[in-house]
Length: 164
Image (cartoon, rainbow, N blue to C red; front, side, top):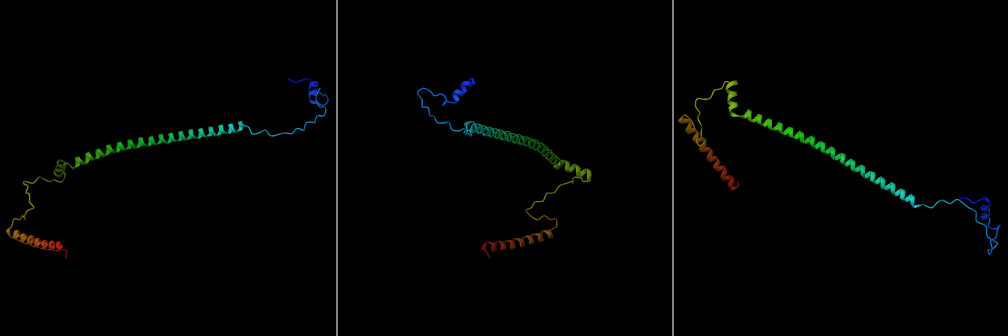
């Protein structure tokens, strides 16, 4: 695609061969200099592409990190659920053991075997309505004491009610 040397020289020196109908006095071409290339859109496009790629990578890393944290939390939750189930089973076993130890039949059997206790021949129940005593003198004294206590209580109650 290069022209022969003779053609290049002819084209390079237009003043040496005047064209018909052109002016013979042409100005000489200004000297050439190196010019920086103008900023191109390719640089901007490359920068935008790099920034978008970085943003996508950072968001993917964040997504992976959140999934890892979620998975770790799930493992911890599963461990806690397992421990809770085992502790609940232990609690139920202990409650059953306490209920067995508190049963009246077991207490009576233990008292008879270990302590040598025997059941009483008869059971006497006392009522709280009055003083129970076997001697008449003690009954009179108990009645007098309870009457005195009632009088004292009545006086205190009246004084509290009147606000003194």
